Length: 287
Ligand SMILES: [Fe+2]
Image (cartoon, rainbow, N blue to C red; front, side, top):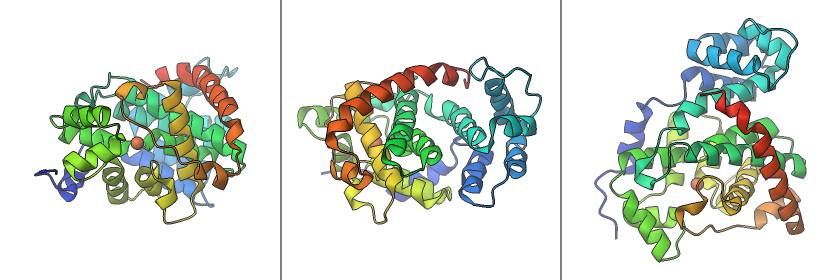
C-alpha cells in the first residue's frame, strides 16, 4: 500500500508555480481552438513573449523551411508560414525547454522525455491523418504534452521513482499502475489535474488523463485515441522511454474508433519513424 505524504492536490498546487509552458503559448493553444482565431491575434500573443518570438523567428528562418526571403518579425512569419504552422512552432518552441529538463527520478536522460514526447506528437499527427479525423495540429500539441504529469512526478517524487520503476519492471506492471500502487495516483491523474488548473482545452485535458486508458475517456475524443496509438508505436520503436522496463497495455479499440485496421500498424510505425527522422533536425533549433 502507498504511504504518500504528498496529496494529488498538493502536487498540482506546487506544480502550477513551476516554470512550465509560457502563458503566451497556452493562450495560443486556447485561441486556435476558436473558429474566430486570426493570424493577427496569434501574432499578438507570440509578440508578448520575447523568448518565444525569438525561437519562432529562428525556426522560421532555418534552412528547414528554405524560404527565399528573411522573416523579419512574427506577423511576417504568421503570414508566410500560416497560422497553423505558427501554432505548431509555438508548441515546439515552448515545450522544448519544458520537457528537455532531465527527470532524474525516472532515470531518463536529458533529452529522452523530449524525444519521446516529440515522437508521439509527430506520430499522433500521422495517425490523425490516416484516420481522417482531421485534427493534425491538435494531435501534435497533444502528443507533445501527453506526459505532463510525468514531469511533475519526476520533480516532486524523485526519491520514489526508482521504487516505482523497479516495481513496474519486476511485477510486469504498467508504469501508471506502479505509480498508483506506490504514490496513490498516476502521472495521468496528475497531468489531467494540472491541465485543468492551467485551463487548457478539454480535449487536451482528456489526453493527459486517458492516454493509457482511452476506453475510459468520458467524451468522444479522437485525440485521446491518436495519442494512445502513437504512444504505443513510439514505445515499440524504442524511441525515448522504450527502455524503462514497464509494460505497455495497448487498447485496440482505439484503432476501431479511428477506423484503422490493425494490419496497418506496422506501416504506420514505419511512417512514424521516417517522419520523426525528417523532423528531428527542426526541433534541435528550438533549443
Ligand atoms: Fe504516459
